[in-house]
Length: 361
Image (cartoon, helix red, strand yellow):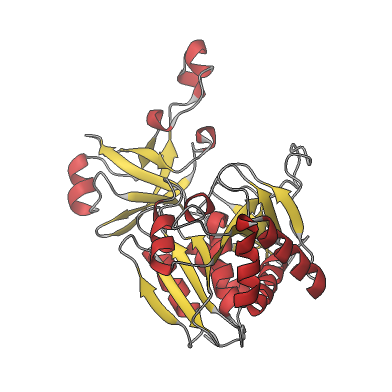
């Protein structure tokens, strides 16, 4: 694709791609389609993809990692009457699932369905007080027997399921809603960072990693394959600009620029790398949000590989992560891409050695 990146189309295609953990192939295809023509494309054996742009020097190596997989569901059993029992893949608020439209990927194509459960009218008072769990639900695909599900529709236990949520632009033309904002936002940044990068004193590897939502399984493969000097993990980061959230706990907001994470439950970044990022943003006039984050991500695996890899988590704010539909601001994506390109142009061997030396001083 040319340097004239159609950002909204990229975000829409990434959001609409089927990509539950262990089947990220459609996301890989989108990344290949939008990658600049000068990059080298490679893969690992877990499903990760690597887009490499070699600048004026083969070293240092800068890894940009974003997980491609989304939360979803897996069929665990087909009942005699044709309903599908399922389990969650990744972390969901299970009480929000009843009534959710889904797509089941079988061997004969995608099959539409809806998640059902016992109506509250038929529950005892004691059962009505219990939390809703996925194990008590089922997917209704309109079938009448197990044989019709398996033979006619090609669906069996182990098949994957995603919300049937197509992307769309909101009334504010820079806001786009779609599924999998965690982490198709980060995947978009893999392309943004390489598009229009130009000259840079290093080798940049944009890596789409696999199976983050079920244990960050592809992160280690990315660290081994690229052996980076510096790593940036790119994420859709929880936004708190909605009713019911304490802004001290979640200060991030849409439309305020990219996010730099100074702490999460899986990693504390190298202090000089964080300082470098902040100083670069301020020198370039790029707005940023400096926040702590809850939970963990691929950085927790990558930063402890080899002898230790200086690593920083950054990304764009995303409303309603780990739900069937989230919202991103394309302006934040644009600014995050500009920020990453600025980092790449400044990370020469001397600067990288200065960052690494923090751990030896």
